[in-house]
Length: 486
Image 1: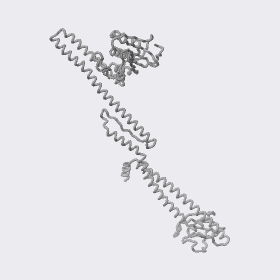
Image 2: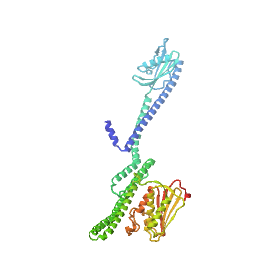
Image 3: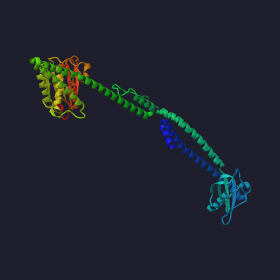
Image 4: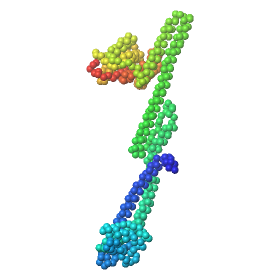
């Protein structure tokens, strides 16, 4: 039975369980208050009755002492008994003036008179007189050798206390019923925001989150429920926003991955088709035109080398993306100024149609870095300036030291990059000029590789472009190098 009640209680809604718990607690409080009030009222009425007994006995004692008789018996259903104490201390009941002054059983009166003669002080006792009910007895010495015992009925006190208990039970029962009913309604209203959040959660559960474009547009609205519910609602919505942002990042990553795979397949398909075509031409030339064989073989090797460079860039990007697991960098202390000078010499040799100016301080700028990778970054930026500008465009490279960082600025005086393309120039396989040939425009991985390598060093790369002035700034963090070292 108890286990069944427990199961029923556990299946109840939280508002009902709280209302029942509040009702049980209120019942305990009502019981304590009712008991205390009833006890206080009983004691108060008993004290009043004791006072009446004492006042009545004072008057009766004076009457006995002066006239030898009882007088002033004005209380209905009161009992009186006068005892004469013998020499040996035994109380002897005096014949009553009125038979109604004594109950049928006087043993309790005699016992109290005997106790008074021994104690020599007033005594109070509550007894149940046979055939009469509960009475309050008081014994006192009227004069030497005479003891008066008076008894007052407690029926009025019991009736008053009984009525008080009845009123308390009815009042407390109605109050408890109202507390449970209205408290349950108030609790339901107060817990409604929690139900709304549960409905929101069920609505989210009905969404298909396996789709790549899945989002969580639902939020828990409302401002009811107090600070605690509002705090829970805020945390709930914050969690939903975090999940929504995570889904958006996942969807973007999936789209980027699909685009990357498609672009990589597209970029690799061209050299693969070229390799296949030159291989067929080489086979044909070997059989029919031996003088063309070397030319076809050279083109075959060039396409294979171009495809190898593309694969190396893709592999490098993949390793940089997994840098949390294994870094592809080999850090060592190297001079940035010397490294930029070597890149400038190589650029002048390979791009004589673009005049290059090197701006660097007289002193070295030594940094913890991977020299090969930073050289690759500078080479990519210089090559990008030469490829996307017409012949004769001036190019400059500058090494500078700013507080907390060293900078490499590669600038050109070309036509600049359109505003719509500046935000995407670092994307993989992205080309500003969609119609540019791959032989002249490259694979679209140069700037992406440069940005990934700079980030792997803890730095960043920035672009500022306008017609006649395009500047790529590579900023590498450095410690212990002051701007005056330039």
